[in-house]
Image 1: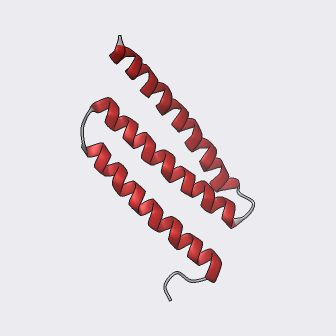
Image 2: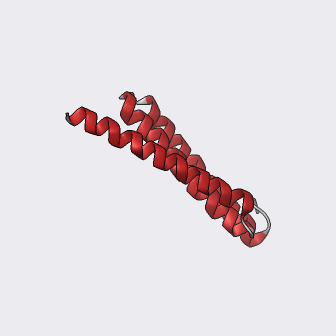
Length: 93
């Protein structure tokens, strides 16, 4: 019973994260300003990372958790680079 509830809750979570990723993709494509697109992209990588984590919970393997860590690190660096580019016009000084 407990495993069935866990499986159903993880599946519902994955569906909701997929819907959130669609909303973030809409914001990235249709954002009126560059700042809105950066925020949408930031939310998109966070949702993607969480989706990979839920796949790891369902399968029980550690590879998904390592992939989520890589996604989080690359997403943070990408967001910082985009923010610096929007503020100063260049990434590397």
